[in-house]
Image (tube, rainbow, N blue to C red):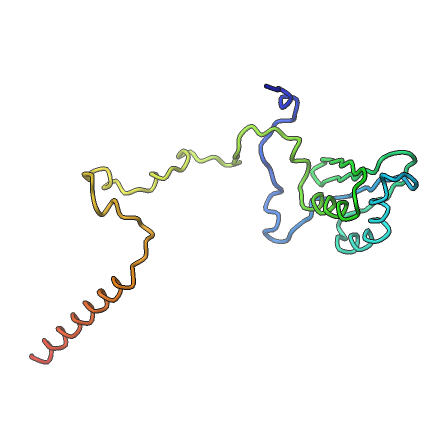
Length: 187
């Protein structure tokens, strides 16, 4: 078994506080597209820069876009987030559609989530002093005194009435209303 996960930062799942409650704030602060002007592995990055980068910048005015040409190096996308995290994506031989998908992924994340070892699968800043919720928390105490098997306790709670049961119920209501009307007339 590998112990490589022990070298990752550990922490709790976190998200920007109430992001989207009033208005959504994109967590991507800046993105840098690094590429080579001549190398073949940067072809998709160059095509994306020539055809689609201006549209991306217009659609996302809150994201600063840097283009950095460098010689004899592979293409890289670097995303920097508001919480200080940086995410590097190596885009060797990626098409312009792949670059577009990677940029969309960087835009919708809130930092480098893959480099965090989770201590627990859930976390709360305000833990309850009453203990965790269970399915039996809000049950009536009368359920403790019931003898089993009990037909009323064995029935599912979310089953709707069938059409026949509804018709029988309507018929009984109508009969009761007719009997009450006849008694009033008799008086």
